[in-house]
Length: 169
Image (tube, rainbow, N blue to C red; front, side, top):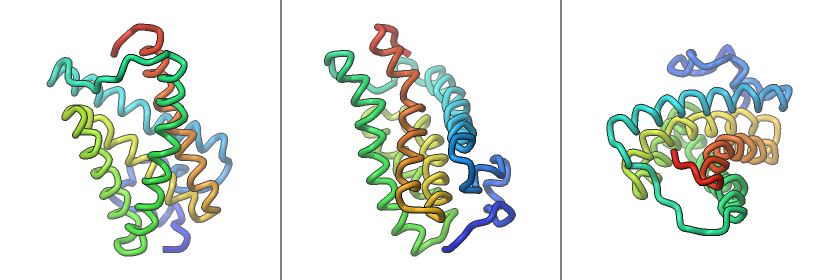
């Protein structure tokens, strides 16, 4: 699928800001996409914690600096490389919306393998990351990988800082 102008964004996603479907002004875009990912995931996290207390993922006891690196740099880079590669195939065969939905569902399921309630929270940010990837793919493959990596790192930064400070969510 070539360009996906904002006026052609899928009806099912029309509640999201139009700017999320326009690969322009990267700094502004990152702020919008991060807010679209982070705020709803906080709400989903609160809901999941209420419904299934103590059901979050467990992390190994490692040096706090290493944990911060793993959560804010390594995981976003690795997961975006996997996500983007899969999205390129999914979009080619199924189109934009099915690719985004399949990707986010897959990431929710994958994270549920570690902690079932975690998948309830994770699918939403990955929906946004998938939109970001496919939207910026129209500009360049490099931007398609870089922007979701950055937004994912920002998504993980707050919880990672809480964890390394000794506070658990």
